[in-house]
Length: 306
Ligand SMILES: [Mn+2]
Image (tube, rainbow, N blue to C red):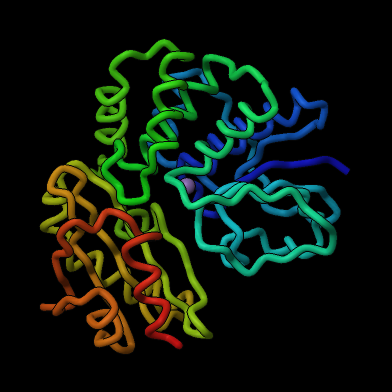
């Protein structure tokens, strides 16, 4: 029996870097852990790993009989299929509490702050473990990604403080410039299929029995997708069918204009309109100021299904 540390399906940078950073901490504390991932990494994560020489965690999708730490999720729909047959030793997360439960007591670090890696930083400080330069750099970029360079309403003082301290450790002075480079890498859409775009940061939620899928594409200029909307809608319809969804939302988030273009395919568009206080035109709407799915979309959508 081994112990693995991994993040959610369709892993983002927080999930991949969190697997690495939390595993290293646990190893320093004498608990042997292996960082893994549940799926392919994104261009953004590739940028982070290349920048700081991080090793790609191995792909592993089955955990029956193993011990695990979960990072960046606590939701069954984002877990491996056999999670119920694994022993969950701990959860480190910054999302709404999911439905995963355990048979045994666990270590739990869940806080309403900008990034799971900020929590991992606090764990290092708590245990007085030094963070190596390469891991500090990766954690710094994961936090800058999740907080959209501090612009997201999820960002807290704890996050900005963590980034500054991590920047000092890894020796990067202009961390905002580096983060912009990262978002440019993340914004590349040329040659990507509609399905790839629609699932880059795709999460499914069970809202009182109704399944809702929400994808978010964070870009420095969403006009790059202007002539691909029809294609995205066609694929959203297929994805809605494939995953038996009531509603699928795609948020094209423009991090410079600071808002999101919302695309909707739903059995009942009025629920989305009511939740987000908007009027859809051709199943679309511009949502000014909306940068965060977890803080500005999900909490308003969920009550529509009560
Ligand atoms: Mn995260």
